[in-house]
Length: 111
Image 1 (tube, rainbow, N blue to C red):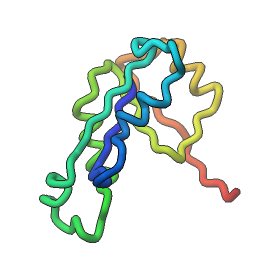
Image 2 (image 1 turned 90 degrees about the horizontal axis):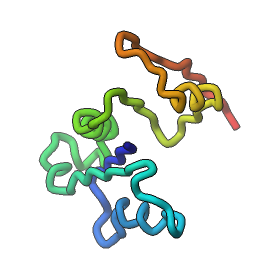
Image 3 (image 1 turned 30 degrees about the vertical axis):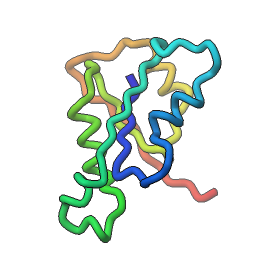
Image 4 (image 1 turned 180 degrees about the vertical axis):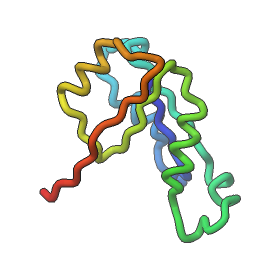
């Protein structure tokens, strides 16, 4: 499953769930890789301290997704993370151990 947390969505705009549904290839199966969108409304955002200074609480949104994940394993990533082919292949093999913690080296590049 892929979890997308839509935090403090802009008013009057299509939801991320609507955009994802519109972007699916014609005839594609929704069952291939389920995508679940968790929408955190503006009212919740505004209940948090310092909400005016931060339109998005990224780490809080990550925790919302992590706590609601249904899978046996969780991969937390961001939009600007690039996964190597070897890493993607390793995950796709589904040969993960329950008694292990996997991590990846993080590197910053200037393009």
